[in-house]
Length: 423
Image (cartoon, rainbow, N blue to C red; front, top):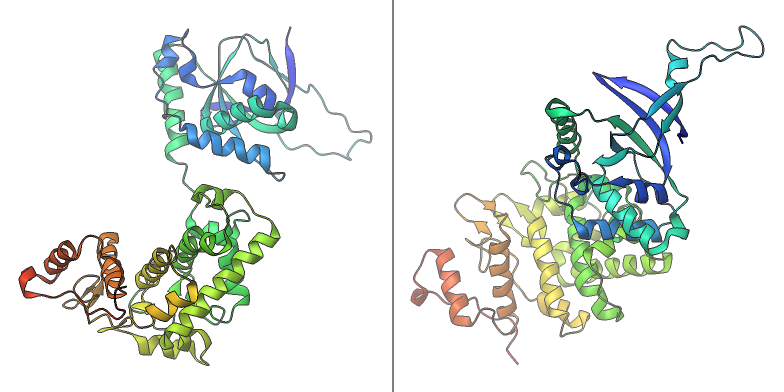
């Protein structure tokens, strides 16, 4: 028996394809991964991406939890059976002259018939297919009747057909690009960091007067004399704050980064995170007068020009330094109250041409910042030592590493002077 589905027929290059819809329960039942078609040895040669099972779990969770769920089309190859196309023979308007059809329109509308003997395999959308299968297995009644658009293309037998299908698969997957970080920040309604970045830019005077560059890199170019940070670094700073500092003081379960990005919290929780972000930046301004100048001063751009200079200036006017200090607070928040932490870090030196920054994250010869996470980690450990915390690695090992950056023998240098006495 042949089952008919309403469809559109179209062509591009030498491919003819058909666009129809399928219920998710049908997708889970009828569409397979190419590597599952063991009875067709030719198809087993098809180059497939290694399925990421954890990604399938994320998609399944999205389907089961998100009421506003939506997928783009899957591309599905058809092998075997006898799928047939039935177009509309004629469309006759009730009154002549009332309806004008474009050329070829009658051939584009019709029904796609399947006998049930066809083998269907995902050419594009394998991770979505994995998520659908897992979600249907967990709760078919919840999402089984949801529909997704499916594009069917025919797979031809023989080595030439295999090569043709394999090429289509490669084109579909190698041209797919991940969502850009800037797009996430601007548009994402699930990602708690993105939501709060937008709120800060809209509502908070610390950031809505030109202090943030709409730049899709974390660093600021030398030509930018007015911005305190970039929008992507704002996102990264909030990631540190929300993952590692917020849970400490609100006594809430620690969440994975994936949960924070893909599971929209309640409005109450969003408000709480936003208020905590504002508090963090207010405490930063209270601890460092130069930050207060750019956050609350009448002319933020003048503060930037004053404190980010070609010869160095304040580490807190460099995006790398801003994230590094957020990580420093995150480490200290494991043991101390937030107000005390900012009181102590306010005693730290901030000038890049002085220890512990000079020739570690700030090249005093070229007057440039490093982008190395390792370099930033060494400085962070030096700052913790200066705050009286137990050195990691040990003081002797930290001294050796520090000496290597300075290009000196470790016997000839001393670690930076502590600003807070060890307990």
